[in-house]
Image 1 (cartoon, rainbow, N blue to C red):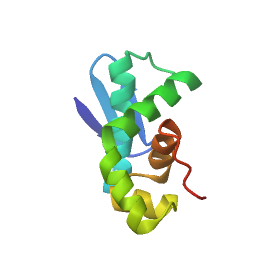
Image 2: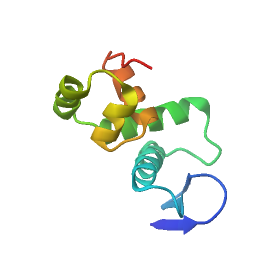
Image 3: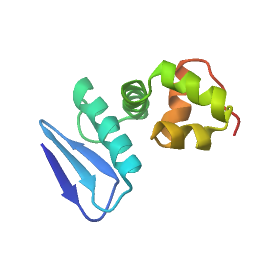
Length: 109
């Protein structure tokens, strides 16, 4: 179940079956936050996640949202600039750099 909140964190995983998203975020921020929280749900993380759980959820979101073929095509057109690639792929720069680190790409900062 997805719920919406107005203040506080961008998103939260509320076991056993709820993700809460902050109202008013951009579509890209909402999508990436939802994918991140789905990573917590998939892993069965408890509330109050550890740093390890946050990294795992970021990686889950990156793998879910970025296709390697689309990344390579965007990189050919836009170079390795993270903000441009993220915009083209419809993800946040954070999710893009997480994906790039998983795949040993090093976009310029």
